[in-house]
Image (cartoon, rainbow, N blue to C red; front, top):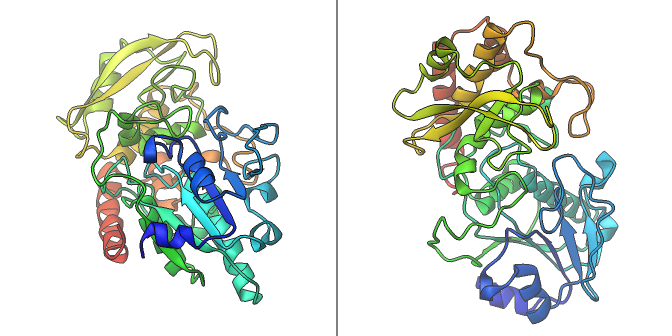
Length: 378
C-alpha cells in the first residue's frame, strides 16, 4: 500500500520521531506530515526532538511550540513515562514511527517504538480502536552485520529487549516487524518510503548527541559496554565511542597496546592519545586512551573487541578498573554491565572463566541462529 494512500485517509495522526528524520521534501519529516496531513500528537524519544539532551537525562522539562500539535515526552523521570498510555493512543487512527536506529539493542529508540506498539496492542485486546502502525524505511547505518547473543530474560530492560542480539543487523521497520510477529501483536503494520533507496553517508543527521558520524555506528555495539565501567566512552569529546580511556591508563604502554590489538588483526588499529572530557566521566581530567580506527569497518566485530578491551584492562589495572554500580536506565537491581552484556556466558568471559576462543565460537553459533530467525525481515 502506498504511503500517500494510507496517509491521505488518516484523520488523527500521532508520530514518534526526532531530528534524524530529515530530508523528505527538504524538511523535518514531522513538519511535512503536519503541513500536508495534520499531526495531532508528536511523541519524543530519549534525547529530545533535536537531540538536545545527554544520556539518561529526563526530557520532562522540554517545551516546544508546534501550534495545534500536542507534544508528549516518552523519556521522563519515571519508568512509567517510557510507555504511552492507552488513553493517549486511543484517539489516533494512525501512528507513524520515523526515527533512526544505529543497529544496537542498547539504543533506546526502537525499544520506545516497541513499547508504543505494545500499548496499541493492548487497546486491540480490549476491543478498543487502535491506530495503524506506519514505519518509515529508515535503514540501519551500521549495515546488515550481526553480532552477539540473545538477551536473557533476567537482563531485560529499556536498553535490551529480551531475545534480541547486541547488533541486530535489521532496518528499523525490519526489527519492528520482527517484534510485531515475535510478541504476537495484533496490529495493522505498514512500511512507508520516506527515504531514498540510496543515500550518501555525508547526508548524516546525528540521531542523538553522541552519535556524531556514521562511523560511530560501526563501533557502538562494543564500546557502549564501557558505560558499565569507570572508563570514559568518550562522552565529552568530539568523537564519543571512537575515543575511550581513563586517567589511570598509560597510553604509552606498548604491552597494553599489543594486547588490545592482538585480535582481529588488519581490521582495526588503535591510536594512542590523551584527552580531557568536558563532561560526564572524568570531566576535566587528563585521560590516557585510544582512538579506534577501522581499516575494514564491515569486517570489524565491535562486540568481541569491547569484551576483549574490558577484560584486558581489568587484567592490566586490577586496582583501578571498576564496574559501575547504582541505577542504570530505570533499573537498580543489577549493575549496568550485566544489563548491557545480558548473557551469563559472556559475563563469565569478563570474569576470566571463559577464553576468547570460547566466546568467539559461541557468538558465531548465536549469530547464525539469529540470521535464520530473522531471514524474512530486513
